Image (cartoon, rainbow, N blue to C red; front, top):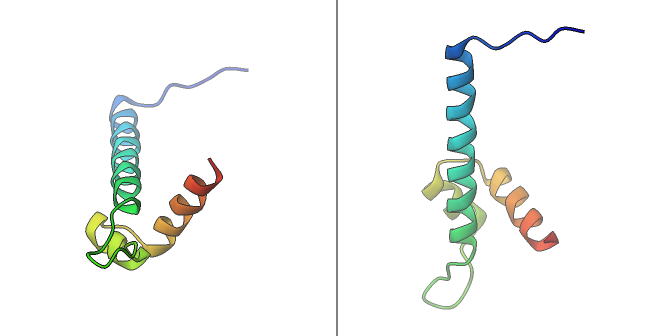
Length: 68
């Protein structure tokens, strides 16, 4: 079985997407620990708006963090 290498442009693009995803996840994790002035946690929609992702992605990260 032979393996083909990705063209350099495709590899850079994939690396960029992975880096962006990792940075978004780190931002979501940081905001999951943030609290409103009344002590309530931020809603998934509020976090998604700040990070630039969907609320379902925030919910997925929240569930993964609870499992760890």
